[in-house]
Amino acid sequence: MHESLPLNTHTNPVTAARVISFAVLLALWASPSYAAQTSTQFDVLINLDVPNADLCRSSSQIGSFGEVVVVTCSSGEIVDFSGDTTAFPWSVTRGDAYRFATLAPTSDASLGTVNSYAGLGPVSSWRRVNLAGRDYLELTISW
Amino acid sequence: MKSLQIKKLLASTIAAAAMIASAPSAQAASVISNFNVDITLTSACSVSTPGNLTFAYTALQAAPATASSPFNITCANLLPYTVGVSGANVTDNAVGLAYSLVVTAPVGGGTGTGASQIYSIDGTIAGGQAGSCVSASCVNTAATNKAKTVTVTY
Image (cartoon, rainbow over all chains, first blue to last red; front, side):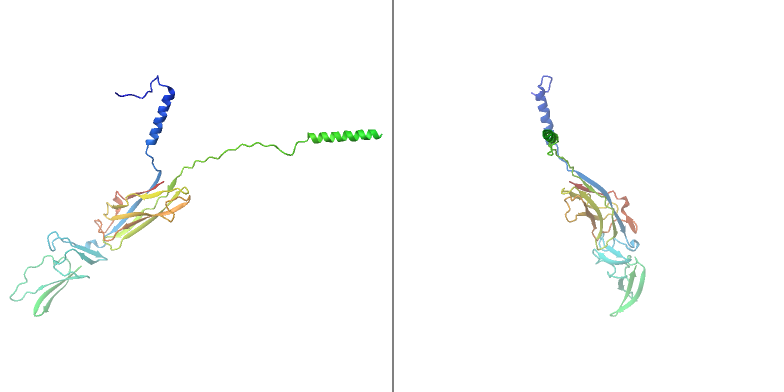
């Protein structure tokens, strides 16, 4: 059976005052204490530069399908490759130009297939090289 | 005749004695009451607003980018306090660069001196990050997580 606090009109005023005081003290004791705080705000501003973004190109068709090769550019030049670059159609070098070579056609042999990705950049050099009795076409590409 | 002179001398002596007796005493009386000066000091701290922390970052740069912004904290003498900054390790949602912020305290920091103490917010963007940008340069103006709060708890 539920019993209510004896705070009706027949309650002793002293008893009522004691009950109320106890309740107030209990409430104060149970209240969480909060530390004082003061605060202020500021912004973080970021200026992001992407140097020579138009000179950096990527292709997912080099090597395995979906392979990602990251080309890092700085001050207008490619300074680094990351990822599996073993399947590059030209050798990875540092500097301005990238070299691609293939056997040159002879009177009784054809060139074979042409790598369609070899012409991504302006051609700076195209020459025929004779090495150990064989002719090669050397293509140098630069950006 | 001589009797008259003796009477005058006697009268003068009596009058002088009466004047001395009626003169106020040189030793004053006093009464004392004590009271206290009661002071209730409510401890408090104040913090100045740091300037915006501005980074300049080039995509994929090798070295980390750093930025710093000083601010002041003044607390009641001997009052211990702590300092924190919100969003201290996040990736900016406009330019896609991750950065970290730390609060650098001066010697004696964490306890009030009654005078201004100089702190700083130091930020770092690690190197090697590409970031997100559709043009040659971008500013994180549209970032919704660029606003930070410095909080002093005491």
